[in-house]
Length: 218
Image 1: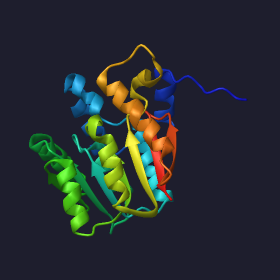
Image 2 (image 1 turned 60 degrees about the vertical axis):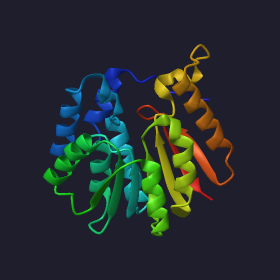
Image 3 (image 1 turned 90 degrees about the vertical axis):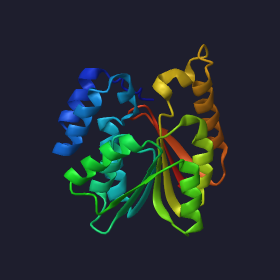
Image 4 (image 1 turned 45 degrees about the vertical axis):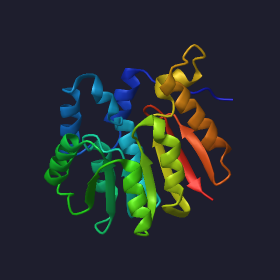
């Protein structure tokens, strides 16, 4: 059995330099996030940008719901991957960060595809359900305590074979560290177990960035 490669910073840079090049605005968002200090950890990785781009293309995704906007890197990445008639709805409760993300979307000329909704995500999701909205893909990258709620609600927003992608499921590797018993690490562990046992979907965890769970609705 082959062993998995340990990713060093040098290998990550090599992969980035030999993969799809990010756009000018995507790079600008990353540069901006680097100025934010520790909070920049909320940004998805470049390798995750590449993964989202590819899965949206090959699965012919047209309608996406994003739960957790931050400054817009994941949203812009997904929007750029959509066809011209594609749609992305992105949810976040932070008005200031939403303004920043919106400015990047406009600069990249993607504002026609993207609709930002400000408010508590679970309330916004209920509104979307009441309006009968359906999506091909839901991307979850928000407050970890509500991951299970977001996941369960998302299942009502996708049809059979629809996808749910969830970020941070490896939690910097701490999910396997038995010494780590803090609340958020425990929440992520419980969520991973819950999804893995859920008969409504089939799932796999991909070691890209901080770990992505990809679920297909059965």
